[in-house]
Length: 58
Image (cartoon, rainbow, N blue to C red):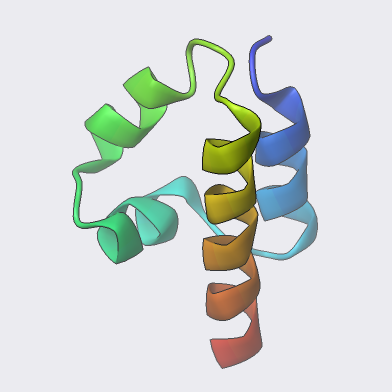
């Protein structure tokens, strides 16, 4: 599965995809569609920063 590393990262940090989508200002279905194909390293780094930001709030 594409971006399984990102999905696992979010899961390990207790962050749901809908929370990441909300932070990015997109819908959850759009977030899911983005993850269907491998993201660039720049996009992956942005994803991880958002996960870290959300997990620190919880």
